[in-house]
Amino acid sequence: MSGFGTPLKIALGLAVIAALIIVPMNFNRYGLFILSQWAVMTIAAMGLNLTLGYAGQVSLAQGAFVGIGAYAAAIMTTHGWPLPAAIVVAIALSFVVGWVLGYPALRVQHHYLAFVTLAFSTLAFLVFRNESWLTGGIYGISNIPRPHIFGLATNKPLPFYYVCLGSLAIVSLAVWWLIRSPWGRAFMALRENPLRAQSLGIDTRRYTLMAFAIGSALGGVAGALYAPLTQYIDPVPFNLSLSLDLLMMVIVGGAGFYFGPFLGAMIAVLLPEWLRFTEGYYLMLYAVAVMLLLIWSPTGILGILDRTMAARRTKAASALRAVAKSRMETVQ
Amino acid sequence: MSNLFDLLVAGLATGAIYALVAVGFTLLWQTSQTINFAQGEFVMLPAFLMLAAMHVGAPLWLAIILGILLSMILLGLAFKLLLVDPMMRHGVLPLAIATMALAIGIKEAVKQFFSAEASPFPSIVPTGDISILGHAVSLQSIGVLVVAILAVVGLTTLLNRTSLGHQMQAAAQNPTVARIIGVPVERMILLTFLINAFLVALASLLITPIYLAKFSSGEVLGQAAFIAAIVGGFNQVRGAIAGGLLIGVLDNLAASYVSTQYRAAVPLIFLIVVILFRPQGLLGRAEERTL
Image (cartoon, rainbow over the protein chains, first blue to last red):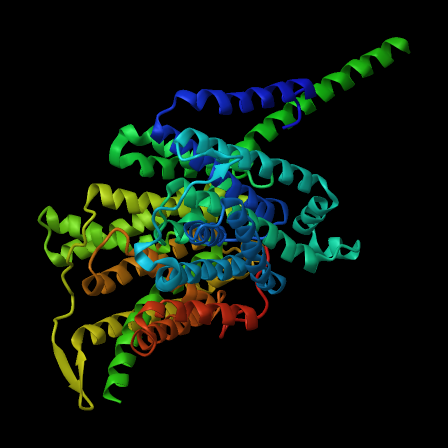
């Protein structure tokens, strides 16, 4: 994203944030639901982006962690616990399960890892569906309450949208800080060259597990918000397709780019809505759009931007060099 | 014991179909590093192509031939030229994601243009039972096994006994050297895509009479084929065959000895165990080709 001046970037960021706060004020119920869903899916995709984009570990299980978070929140809040407590539990639970899921990553990589996580994802779905004493089985859990934040009820769509947006803001800041911290650098070292990372004294074992655990924990956060958003959950939304969708969001937006998940989730959540006028064809068009985009730019949308910027920078730099050279020649 | 025998036969029949799909899957991986997440949808589609041909009045045999030819054009040629070729040089993951999108596209297209409901599909094998060693075995199971075995034997003969097969193996194992000694690598890769399309069309023809033609049936099939391919050995054709048969039998045994609720979990747990303790697969070689 470099290439803009810093003040311009800050102004652009503030404008987007202001727009996200002000514009939805007169949205209808459905519009607010979709926007809230975007915020929730962005959080889950940011988690996967940490695991995949920054640490380079393929995971097809992010949807399962959204499910774990959603069930934790649904079970706790319907038993009278406040949502923040449920979010803490969702984070802790997803973190621990994610940590354990990271162990196969120490042994196998790439497509093998993809299939282990894929199997985990389907197993989690079976547990959601079959353990009805806990999860309500195929009937699911209904009447999930929305929280009171600082004494304000968030039952209406607009206040709850702000809850989602606020959570997204907190997660975004945390991730921003994380990828700039030594941990974030260690993750990237892991992705670029694990052997070299290890020889430089990075505990690759611990960071691999951490990458899984933190990414999964963010999936848990997203789930804990998803449950009160829909106010009803059953196992179906948390099947393998959700994991595949989240993976697609990360890749389409641009894996390893900070803003990738925001864009990817926007395309995955909003594009089908915009294409709804095409009726039955919209998912087909979405699929074709994703394929065309990946053929054009395998690094996703931000990959295109990145290349354009890089090209412009090179052009600017060579222009500067040319000027410098001609000056040198005139001096001589 | 009679029960166990029936389960084994039924399991081998399903397993033989999984094996066909898994073999195609490993062929694509070996020659072009394509992890085809749409492989299950590739099995689902040909049945609908055949149904469509019958709908416009073609007799069954013509519909089958047309279905297989169309599959080879769409799922072999077009898939390679339009999706795999432009993406192959960008690495494994973007292409895998693109095939996920393709899976959604195929599923939605079938739902939209054919039907969201399950349609019956005529069996190429007469229904009924025959008696083997005092057990009633359905002709369908035997038919499936015979066709699948013929296909697998044909394929392994092609790969191991003919010059064409040796060229294909060379193209898969070391494309650079293969090119140097004059193997038309590009054509060999295309050939594996056509073979894969043929195998999935055959699998479609065998499995659809049993499970009906439905737009969503590819999910289960695709996953079974992945598991079979990995369990058997991702870089071996015979591994994929063994894996397919094993998963088919395991699936059928789990259905009657484990609770129906967790039946689907058995192959998955088996998969995780195999990947953790023998990642190259039961029959696979430890070394893997590198590009």
